[in-house]
Image (cartoon, rainbow, N blue to C red; front, side, top):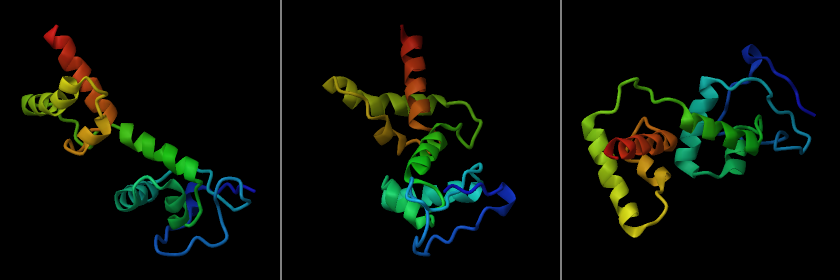
Length: 140
């Protein structure tokens, strides 16, 4: 059974409470089906930083109010949102990105944007890839 909880009535998150009695993808627990809020987004970011991409564990730590698959999908959307800053790329960032990509190019392997992303706060892996493609087009 899925409950629809309006945004105004969404429960507060106790990140230290055990996940008793609820949630978890089709196991009969009550789960939120309303829009995500900033509190949940911040909690997901903190929990992913602490536990990695252990979606089931994160769902439990969130009290079972969201399924592990919805948390994973939300995390992906958070990663593709625009950076906090609306500043354009600086020439220094272009240079740094070129340096970070070089080891992958010399090996002829797939560019691990997720790994590179850790060195560019505020930019998603998708934005880094798109910027690299723009840099390559300018060189042609």
